[in-house]
Image (cartoon, rainbow, N blue to C red):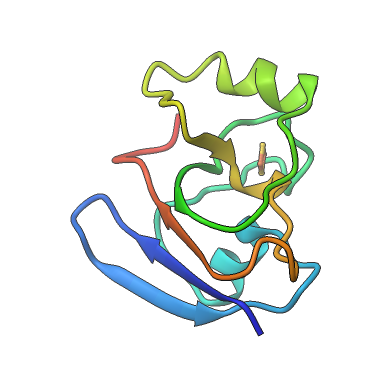
Length: 104
Ligand code: FES
């Protein structure tokens, strides 16, 4: 079972077991990890599940919908992703994601 480590903006860490097939956003919701709002419920249209992927195995590519939402984030970095679009799998393996100071 892959482990996802969430690092809040203040450095607080949450290390949780993730079921394969869940999105990183769904994992955060399941374990009440603060810092992800996910207003649209995972449809890639709100951008409030932004995270920074610090380490992982292989990730799916950013598709045009995700790209357009990430483009609206002034705090975007090269490792920015929408956590609702990242599925935990054998390929992704253990992941570490940092959360922004706030979602917008
Ligand atoms: Fe809305 Fe990810 S939950 S874009």
